Length: 320
Image 1 (tube, one colour):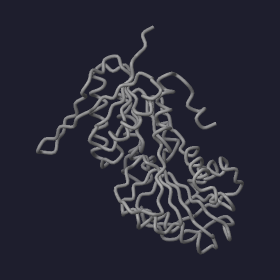
Image 2 (tube, one colour; image 1 turned 180 degrees about the vertical axis):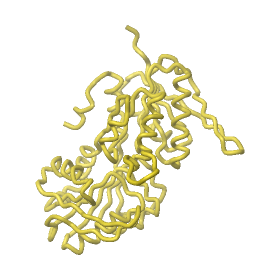
Image 3 (cartoon, one colour; image 1 turned 90 degrees about the vertical axis):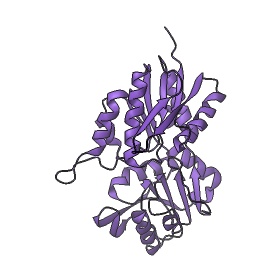
Image 4 (cartoon, one colour; image 1 turned 60 degrees about the vertical axis):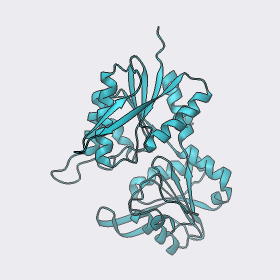
């Protein structure tokens, strides 16, 4: 039986290109036969663009590393076009590696006459791609929207290792907190990995998206350190309110960890409220001089997941 070669594909002029290069460098050290293939994006004066894949894709397993820093409309359009280009180039298998899967918050019909946008993305990806690889999906149930295999990696083992090695003092007298009931299972999983029994949960009220009216905390956090965990930070309104509520409830120090740092209203507006803020590298942070922010890299995790996928090995072993 023929062994299919593997290609890492990305636009070298984007953050996805930086991410792909680092993943490729990790894979190259293990001698797994991966090649790095570039996608150029030619833009026209009217705003249209045309992607072009540089090297031959025929009969190759293609891991397309998409750029999570693109605005949502361009992100979605490029994803569709590059997937179709790979399909038309006779790729053996197309695997979309999407560090931050946009539109994931729109996972249900919460009012009349709105789309379930996460399902639209799933249907469109499924037209051309054969598999999706992402990390810390906003709602794990979105997996059910996909008709193709869907791997949702967990960042927690990487984050917990980072905290234990770099900041072991944080773990003492620590409570893991979720900003809302929807993230309680996420907080429980994180606490379990750390060997912590109790969690705290915030209950928030808001009139509209990104505007939190109030937040109350269920759980004992008085005279304890608090680590708030969430899958993403957008404007940061909920996180800021949670931090204020935790301090008002008697918390000693308040930390936070978010996988995807969107920071649409600025980084410091959010992070300056915390004693220390941990964030993943799925989205590039362009601001500098952030003394209380630590970026945790998932490059090795993605590289290992890609290697295991290419060799038909288990991904769940990464998190046991």
